[in-house]
Length: 204
DNA sequence: CCCTGATTCGC
DNA sequence: GCGAATCAGG
Image (cartoon, rainbow, N blue to C red; front, side, top):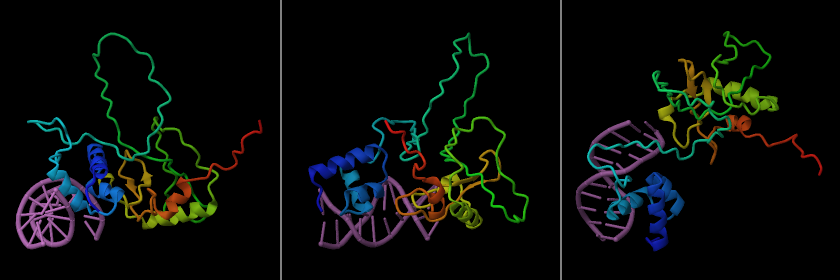
């Protein structure tokens, strides 16, 4: 494969979007990430940022593929006075999908009850029900074998299923090998992706 | 171990 | 110009 205009164009585009060299290479096909990097350098766009002179601002936190959660509720209208009390809103990076609350009826050794933080901003939980019991059992099993990796250790091929309460020590990501093209391991894909069943639309 | 980009250098 | 090999890091 050669660097046709089209391919170069896509390279520029993707690189500009913050895609990694390997991702770009995969997309283009016929080239390795090395080739991509080499080309990137030759094109002189090694630095993704079109503007980052002196004091560099490296991590523009480009969320490439994090499940975007719809933001329905708008903030309460509070056009009042001055900001005397700086509301520090720490945007908690938590691409957390529905936390399954599961517990097969069986002698579960440790008193590891459901981990439902009494917090407050629990986003809409689609459905923790209607998941095949088998899948649930499977997940419970896998959870024990999970690699328990941290956020920073997540990669394209590590299961991103979160376990526990992010606000406590009792939190990690599954980390098992993901299923091809999915963000989760086989077991978690089972509970994460439910066919929208039982939702037969009313006849019109 | 998985991954990232950076550089080198023979082609 | 190209990209594999290598380097340096997370």
